[in-house]
Amino acid sequence: MIKPFLFQAIYGEYVLSRPLDGVNKFRGAGELIQYTPEHGDTTGTNIYGYEVTVVEGKVVKRGGNNSSIPNNGYVLSIHGSDWLMENALMGAEVDIKDGRVLITIPK
Image (cartoon, rainbow, N blue to C red; front, side, top):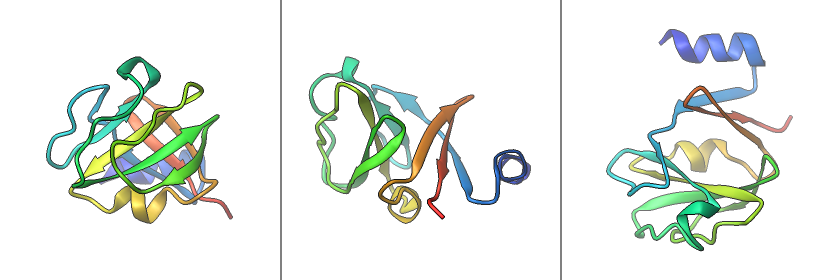
C-alpha cells in the first residue's frame, strides 16, 4: 500500500505504477510481462490478455495480442487485469524502474 503512494509523491500525481512480473517470458495468469526485440518479432501471446506497444517511451498502440515488437521499443502484455487498458492511454509516457512499470498519464 505504501509503494504506490511513494511513487505518486516522488513522480507526481499522474504517475501510476505496478510491478513487472518478467521480461521475454511466457505470460502466465495475472502477470505483466515486457517483450523486447530480443524475444523475437511478436509476443506470441494468446487472446486472453491485453497489450500496449511502447516506442521511445510513449504508448503508440493499444489492444490485441501476439503484437509485433518494434525494434525501437517494446510491448507490455498483461493477463487477468484491466490495468493497462485503463491506464496506458495513447501518448502516455512509460518507464520501467526498479522492476516497476511507471505510466505517466497525459494531462
